[in-house]
Image (cartoon, rainbow, N blue to C red; front, side, top):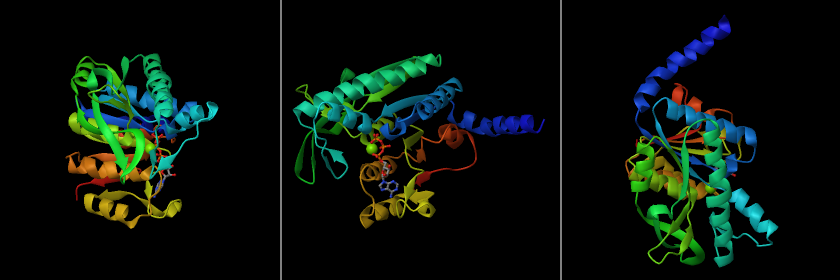
Length: 287
Ligand SMILES: Nc1ncnc2c1ncn2[C@@H]1O[C@H](COP(=O)(O)OP(=O)(O)OP(=O)(O)O)[C@@H](O)[C@H]1O
Ligand SMILES: [Mg+2]
């Protein structure tokens, strides 16, 4: 009986959130870091399908750093990074595209469809969704790494309007047809801005941003635009967290008010974040 009461309380608590987000676009950055075990991946997919079934319009943008590294290792190609950004030569970009737009993208599409929702996997090349130019890291040439110049969102909009969950691999192109690897956080934030998303959620493998990583007691539950900029300037963030916070800052500046970073490896963290009153992870706000 007690159990039933708790379950019904949870459903009642979710009602205002279901109403608030009905018909709204929610962009979910599915970090490659959260795809390492089948259980957390399945739990994220189930949560996204549930979001869709209660009337939200989810869009998934995925990463895949670890799978790319594994494949490069198998092919004896050494991965290199500059300030969290991959150095991508001609040989590497072929592998990056194969892994992101092939293996990872279609695996996610397949899993969504096994939960009886429809999904289409695209890369930013399809319908020139993500148009890029070459990105330089502090003036350094890092190869086929793209900086997004324009999002053409008509393909995404038509998929969403047809009740299909789009899954986007962060690969871009330019007018000459070159292939670029784009940081998945950047792709998610640009797509969220272009679709005027109600919410942007970064699923990663840590509980949020720590002031002194990895000191568990230093988790930051809320960052304003100003404090996020100050934290970035402190220079304590490393690796993949640098582009992540830069993108949160840019998304806030682009008018997305509802940005969250949560741990995708905690089962159903996404449902918890969206449908309950309890805040988890790190939330970004304008003020
Ligand atoms: N201050 C910090 N707080 C939290 N994590 C931090 C911090 N500084 C660095 N990190 C690192 O950032 C990592 C998350 O970024 P990372 O790019 O590795 O994952 P992701 O973006 O979720 O996955 P992918 O890049 O494959 O899509 C954490 O695992 C952690 O090691
Ligand atoms: Mg990353």
